[in-house]
Length: 147
Image (cartoon, rainbow, N blue to C red):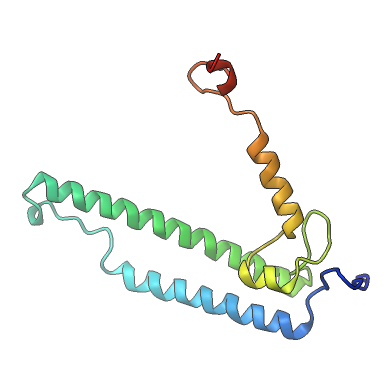
């Protein structure tokens, strides 16, 4: 059973808040599905006869590449929405997957698919930013290259 939040702590989501967030998730999901259905008929149709100029062809290829990137982002977000809806059904939505503390309504509303509270997310990003990155060509750290 979840513990009660103290005065300055974030409380677990109540049923009304979960219902509101679920509605927003379903709306986002439907928007993406509708957008993809509209694009299905007009996408991936590059005809070389329509583009005699190499510049036009290159421009069309760049545009198609961007569309693919956007589409992949939408598919990724759809997967996150599905996972969030599953967490709602399981009763774990709004609970940080790392520390099991409440995520909080405002954060959850700002990032509907958030799986971590702000403290755990910031700690993860800080760790990620502080990790040593190596040059793939030389096998040396970036600081070693600066010497």
